[in-house]
Amino acid sequence: MKPNLRACGQAMVTALVNAVLAVALMLLVEFAISGTFQVPEPYLWAGLVIWLVIFAGQFWRQRHLCKHGEHGNNLPQN
Image (cartoon, rainbow, N blue to C red):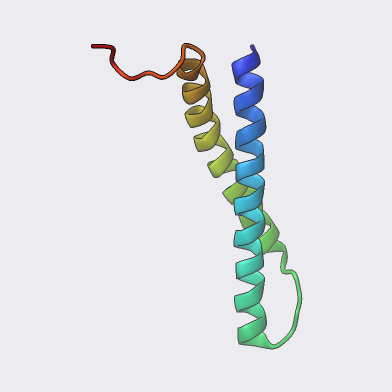
């Protein structure tokens, strides 16, 4: 269970940072185009979808790395 919790935490942080950066970039482009600083609702939904997609991928990856990382490095022994 511990590898899953660790993987979940790492995936959550990675997904949050990436989603915040994506929304910030969308808002920056919106400001450059329109000249007003408004947060349209679709941008928030897009940020949520980005977070979900990145979280799912990172959770799978981190869980895999944590499970195989428990037994030391997974390099072949000669």
